[in-house]
Amino acid sequence: MAKQKVVTLDGRTGEGGGQLVRVAVALAALTGTPIRINNVRGNRAGKVRGGGLKAQHVSCIQCLADATQADVTGCSVGSKTIEFRANISPEAIKNRNIRVKAESAASILLVFQATLPFFLFAGDEPGSPITLTIQGGSNVSFSLSFEYLDQVLLPALERFGIKVERKLEHRGWSHGTPEIGSAKFTITPIPLGHSLKEPNWPRDRGDITRIDVSILVPGQVQQPLKEALNFELGVVFPGIEINFLLVGDSRHRARMYTLLVAHTTTGLRFGRDWLYSGSTRNPDYSKIVTEIAQRVVDELDAELRKGGVVDEYLQDQLIVFQALVEGRSSIARTPVALDSDRERIDRMDEPFGDGSLHTTTARWVTSQLLPQVKWINDGRVCEGAGWKTSSPDLSIESPLKDLQ
Image (cartoon, rainbow, N blue to C red; front, side, top):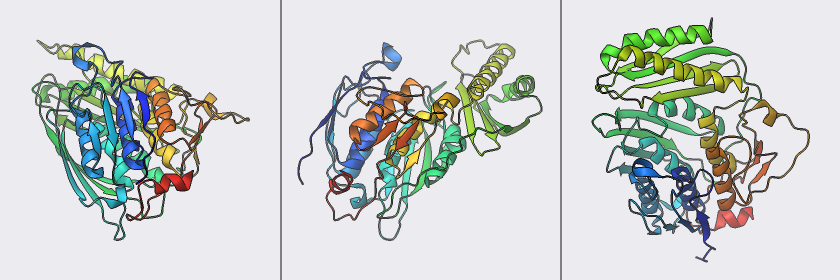
């Protein structure tokens, strides 16, 4: 197999955290492009979020390294430099029943996020599914939750033709007494010779039709929080149906999670959540439930007022899939970004475009690993690579050579 040039990334670029690592390693595993990341998570300071690899990053990298029989250096907690070179392509993998065990309550969903692009392209002739079971946390700080993935992210990915069955086997928490959970995902890979489909994404947000509410709090907090949410939602979204989709007992005073999902007439979903981070020592629950309700309702309202067709957190999670599709997609967070008569190819030598720092950084990483992708008008439009699955007897470079 001919050697490809190593792509070197500075881990301090843009958001400079774990997202850069996850996107880069995911695309390196998929494309076979060898990578080196220096200054890993170099923008993360402090004891809690300090730089270097954390347990969930190591779990992601090791899972993809095992699947691709990769040559890897620096895959350990605290490592500031990582090198990754895949040796087999997704179609050549033999094990289709994969288990990932985190050494802590590291986020299940971030591990899933990092490995999904690779396993999506692991199609075989019979069309066999990939079963991915991940142990770790389902409700963790600085991460999407299982509920957000289930209610917002995966429904959005269905527009790309992505099918994933999911089951939360046991809930895991980073708050309170750390608890390791487990989730099982059954991924339907793209058929051989096919690519992700161009998403039929609405250009208009539409009107709000319903707001789904999920709360996971101690038993004695459930009713007060429901009342507080009903009040705040009634004030900000009068006349809109409120549906309490999930009301569960978190079994610890430090575990309080709330998710709001707004549904629109065009089929879009906008999510806003919060894993409560305030003090819960001698808690005054009457004040806490008001704080939670006001925060999530106000943040959802602020997001919807932007008038775009995607929420802040969903937008950056869709970047990789936009880059891989065959065709064009436009998933903008503001109406200004949607309206433009002229097309201008974006420069991609640094984070760029519409959206949060996570979104602009994700665009930059995809441009380094998939240079054939074009971003247009500040990231408003993506002309994808049209990455296709191929026969397992082809070399890992073959899809990239075909595209170039």
